[in-house]
Length: 133
Image 1: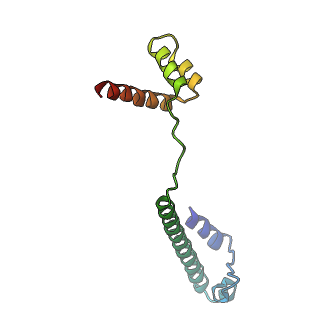
Image 2: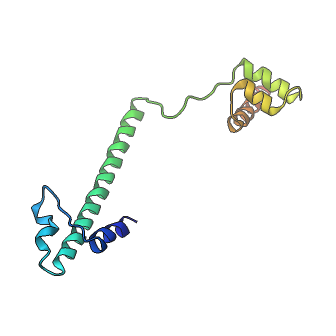
Image 3: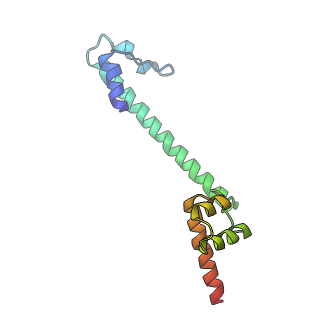
């Protein structure tokens, strides 16, 4: 996609590339020399692509280091877990006894369906675990 746009700009629209802080990479200088202008343009594209990829790698590495340091300091990532409170337990009982629908139960406890059913599973597991103890 970027390569296609680059080719369109350079070859079809005959746009000159000027790198302000690198006079050597100014394609306007090479207009009279057939082929050199294209070579320099392609060289600039490759150089800029390499620099962008290298920068992305460095950013990822710094991010990884930052995450490692944060984890060592005990920083928690992600949302806080919605705890199973008394409201959930009461609503769960009503839902299990078919007094309310699942949708009504989800609305009452303020959870979306995936979260609701995950918490139901956790709650039922904790009930089973407490029976065995």
